[in-house]
Image (cartoon, rainbow, N blue to C red; front, side):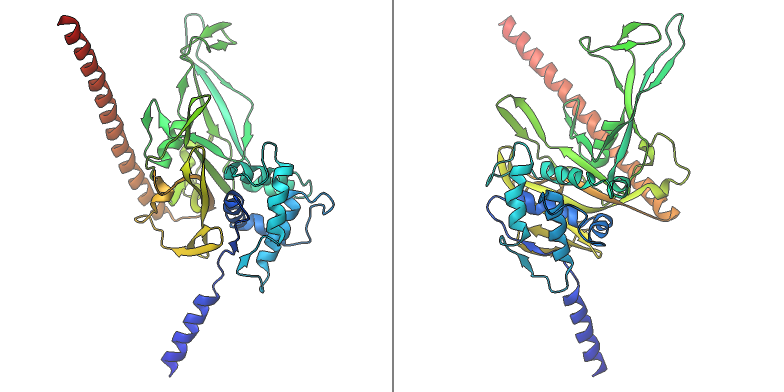
Length: 387
């Protein structure tokens, strides 16, 4: 009897475990729903907004005010399982085109554009600005280095820091597709030469245009929430955009210590854990959005009103997160700072060393393949000329 009661207790606990609420699609509003789910799942921000009465003005019905009203409803114990279009959700849908330049009523819009517009709008509140900024703001320091030339020693110049809410990284480097999120970050933070004669660096020490100087970015801080946007779209021409759907390995945990301007004494405390992803399925011209969020150690797929528990682990990452031409591609990744032990950090270092070795081999093989392809083309052209 005790065993039966214990099983009933466990089942009831599982059933009561909170999960994200379903959000009705009010007509091309999947971009809105995916953004709301991803933002609501950032607990430090949600706690700030729901701890007190709505800090935003009700008279203007701003997106920040409406969003805060909506998530306050999410927090209620008697909340509905699915929020319909006649709730604040519907008003958010109507107000978004009015507030965001370029948005159209009833049209499919870009989820990350809405996500960051809303986040910036939340930051506009002066009373909460400092609390929210410390969660999200990251500061990038551009550094320019020039080698020594005759009569002048080597010089280093640090430009004013640039602030942003996300690191926006390319998924292709020198025409070679990058195969992991860490490789994308490494490409973003690497040194690059001013090799374009049309865009040289004007060295203030020598007063000359130089193409041998390098520029790179370093992070000045490690925010509580780290957001990484993959540039999954490649502009072919003014009328054509290509979506890049190749698979990119997405780690559930990352460490940013190697990208920091000042090398930390405690690199294991610069670790981040993935808590949310926004997915786009379809083409560059349009498609469907959904989100994955992790809450209470459980992952959920949030597809409008359909909320599905999913099993995600290092060995099991869904294809629509890593990239797929048919199943969707992840392009906004939200990480939250976490603490790991020294032994966990050392294990992570070993895995990273192996990843870098494999990726270096892949890049070398791809570069060799490209050279062989060019050589084959040249031989064909020469053969045709000799005929």
